Image (tube, rainbow, N blue to C red):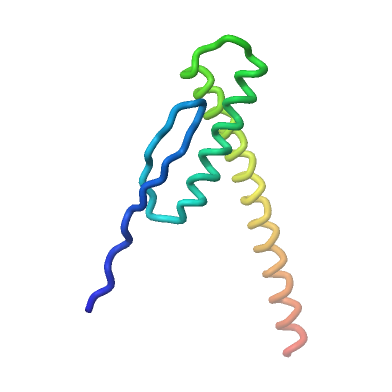
Length: 99
């Protein structure tokens, strides 16, 4: 019998007092953790910014996460470059030892 394709699981999360039912093919706990991070970021922005509407808070939270993601991508690219360089160096050293 062929394996069944992944089934979407429903997850209820609350962000800024709004409940959302979302579907995920992955681990529901991961989606819940992401929703909690969004909720925390939005609440932090609301506490600092005062009386601004939720859609503006959501945009500011998205910008924060996008900036964080870009920073992490740059860091990952740098690490990959360092790993590639070290791998080539180790490969050359290993070639010398073997010869």
